[in-house]
Length: 233
Image 1 (cartoon, rainbow, N blue to C red):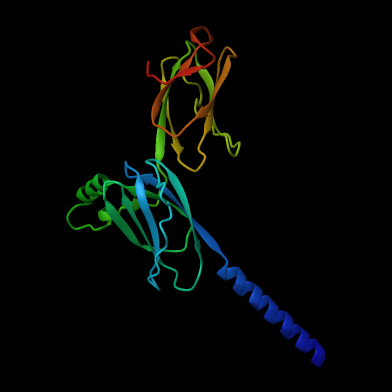
Image 2 (image 1 turned 30 degrees about the vertical axis):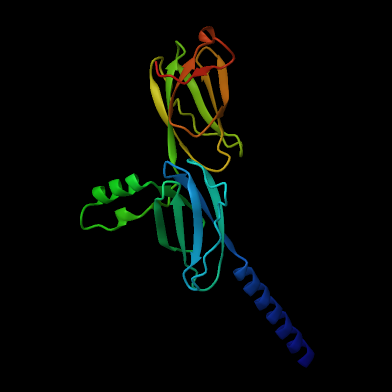
């Protein structure tokens, strides 16, 4: 009986140690999107408890305009950090209370922060924040110039293979248009595919993250292998 109790105690201690190790090794990821309109030359994380500041996370190469960078955080009691950055024009900003969570972080330009402050009004302080917890969004404005109704219109994520709903709905008439939003991420690339009521099918396999007009072309209008053009009608 005594041996059994000792064994159970040992097992309990091992489980407790394993749980403690699991907690301390738990990590989160901040996906940083550079929407400042210029190159970021310095990106730092500072531990608010110890004051310890990281090295320049983007190094000598920096983070290009529109670039994406991932920062990992390791959980601990009282976890809180400051994220700071400096651009090549000398603009500096910081967000002083990041907690342990996996989130997108979009870094704003000086002008965008000023716009947010103005929009928030004189009594609000949240507008001064140099970042948001949302990934950037682009818009494809898709115009149907095929000469017939488009019955199927899809966006497929090239990384995951996930296919969207049918953006044509009950049918996208000739001359009509629809706006499709894309949310940025590392390795962003999507395929746009469509089908018309006559059975004509086509796809463009490498759409990148950008806000652009897209015209769906008929088979007769093709001047090359591309079934779309990046122009509005």
